[in-house]
Length: 295
Image 1 (tube, helix red, strand yellow):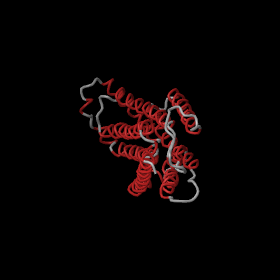
Image 2 (spheres, helix red, strand yellow; image 1 turned 60 degrees about the horizontal axis):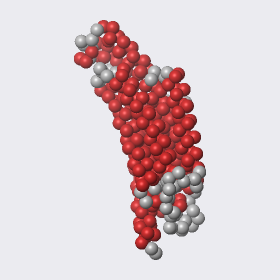
Image 3 (cartoon, rainbow, N blue to C red; image 1 turned 90 degrees about the vertical axis):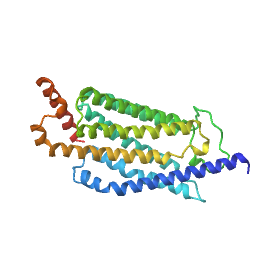
Image 4 (cartoon, helix red, strand yellow; image 1 turned 180 degrees about the vertical axis):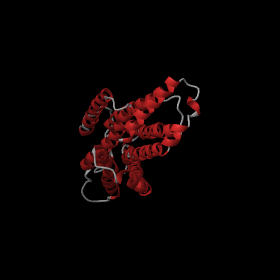
């Protein structure tokens, strides 16, 4: 075996171990957040949002399980990479759907924002899927694998462009949320505000970080590493998408629990504003919370 082949074998082993580790993270997170899921989702009516949540929460177990099986398989027929890809795509789209819904709610469910988000989402999905299902058309040049039968654990360089499109989409969601936070509520620094907006922006930043990491790995790293964080990408979307949902519903309940005290105590950061400004901020804040509570 040549030195190049030996190096690729070592790279593939690292990639497989990383995917198995990501599957373990998904199982661990499910165990520690199962109580939150029961509390914040189980006793709510079935609607489109809950369906999307269930898909993003549970479908990754199938996709990650198939990837872990492929990593542990030492002989036999090739792993069902097509099924894995389809499940991964649906799971990530569902997780991104939660982010879209949250962003729309932050914008008081504006029809113009909804049309823009849906249009941009559809364009993003079509572009990403088109590059993913036509791997033979290499837009980024790459060397050919020297190991036969390992294509299931190596992706084309086109995957870097797919992740780049996804990262751009996530950056737009983050920018819209950040703009709303610092444009409408820059003078309000309550704990509820930090949880609702700050927590969501932090989780979205983490999702963007893993997506950008996959862009770099798929674009410049050796072929053996191209799928190293494939399962982690899926897991991070599922884990953080679920946590955004749990934290926002938790913060909404705290809003109602403290409603009486908030109506009798004027926060320090708005004591020196004009009455018209206070009324405007309160009305805007209540509209935002009313929209957020439905998600």
